[in-house]
Image (cartoon, rainbow, N blue to C red; front, side, top):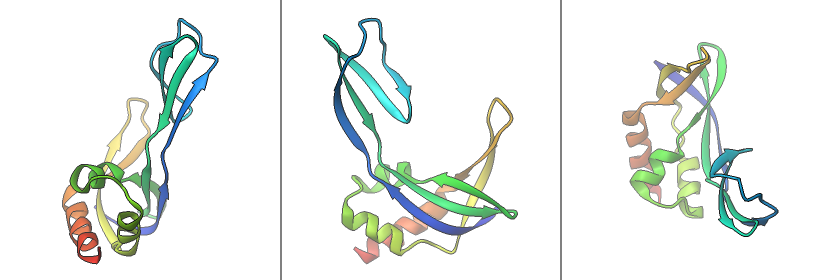
Length: 125
């Protein structure tokens, strides 16, 4: 189904070396950060960068993560690339409706729509 795009936002990633972790701690995902204990109370914590598109689907607002596509097909999200992606935001993108195990609904962008968007963004750069 087609969804009208409302906004696009970029959230930069983070990488930190933190102290105060317990010896029994394992690799985990907590508070939008991946935590990897390295030993002696230290751990690396990182949060990947995100490109989030706000869409209107059947009169409801939803957010769709599209950063994975641009990272896989264009590489790192540099400042120039993010500006090109934001500048070429299409009016509509095709989305697929998915359901979690708990019954919540979320939307995933169609790759064909993202390929057209990537082609337009590469032309701007």
